[in-house]
Length: 248
Image (cartoon, rainbow, N blue to C red; front, side, top):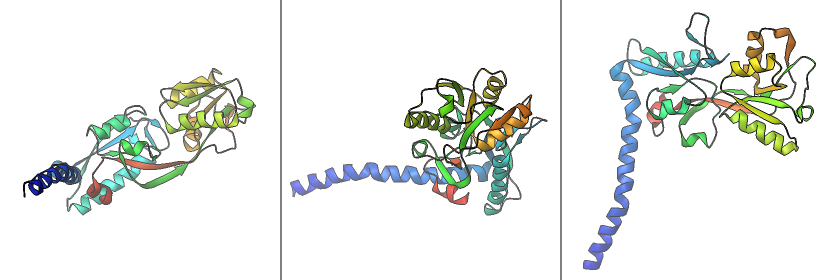
């Protein structure tokens, strides 16, 4: 009997943490919708430098495809929660700190061109895919149009992104040695290409098209033809919040 009692106590100690974890997960899954319902506010994290998906427009307002999409999501959430409307608060983030905004509960939805990857699922959850893009090269007219032609030259890329990793992997797989120059913003990369400090800028093609339009000399820039990666975008969401994810 004593042996059975000890066995039961041991099993209880093993199962208890699992029960606590489940309870915490349930609390987490209810927290975002509950907070939104109480505050009547949805906090949208966006980037100011990732057109046409997420950027600050000429009058200083958040704009872009992902921002518009999240505005529509907010309207649907208001309907689901039976609220007349929901206020939107915008939280400006960068490529470097965007996931922390969700992890630290500073924002509810990450609304910018984020590729959903397995490693990033350790940081945040994701909605269903919202857009599929691919990476390519922005070059000066008459410049090198392939990675092979960029051997021993400087290639700019946004630091801390899946695009940066894709560039390193592509160069390695092709046996090409080039000088990869990480930049903090797309605007910085565009300026470096305009000033001939780099020979090409590597990024998602939809973003590169917008950057060319914003360039001081759009006619002097172009896209190389090849897609060099596939980037499936999705909205970033808090971990363990299945009710909120399903609502979105």
